[in-house]
Amino acid sequence: MVLVPLAIAYADQYRRQSDEGAAKWFGDENMPRKLRHCVLFMNETALEISRPIGLRGRVDQVYKNPDGKLIIVDTKTRKKHQVFPDDVFQVSLYRLLVQYSQRKTVLDTAYIRTVVFLSNTRKTVKYHPITLMPEQKILQRYQQLRKSR
Image (cartoon, rainbow, N blue to C red; front, side, top):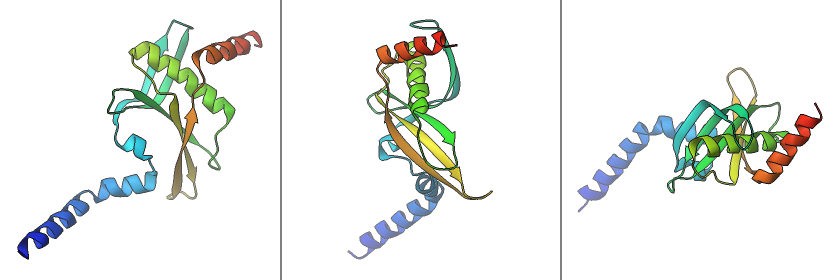
C-alpha cells in the first residue's frame, strides 16, 4: 500500500524535473492560460493580400486554439509595459492579413506582448489582451490614413 504513493511521488518529481525548462519558461514568460493550450500556427510569417485592401506585413505569432480558431500575438519592446491605440490598429490589420490569407477564423481578442529589459540579462514580459477593431472600422481608418499622406 505504501509503495503506490511513493511511486506516484517519485514519478511526479521526475516529471517536474524533466519539465523544469518549460515550466521556468512559462513562469518567466507569464503566458496567459488561454494561449498555453494552443499550438503555434505561424511565427514571424510574411503575408500579403489584395482584398479587401492591398496589404503586406509580417505577423509575429499566430496560435491555433483547440477549436481551430486563431489568436494573434504581437511583441513590442518598450521602456514600460503599455499598449498604444496604434498597436491595436496594427494588430487589427494583421487580423485582415491572417484571416484573408489563411481563410480561417481569427478571434476578436489578440495579445500585445510587451518586453521590458531591466538589464542585459533580466527582462519582464507581460501579455496585454486587446479587442481587435471590426473590419469596417479598420478599412475606414486605413482609408483615412491613406488620404492624409
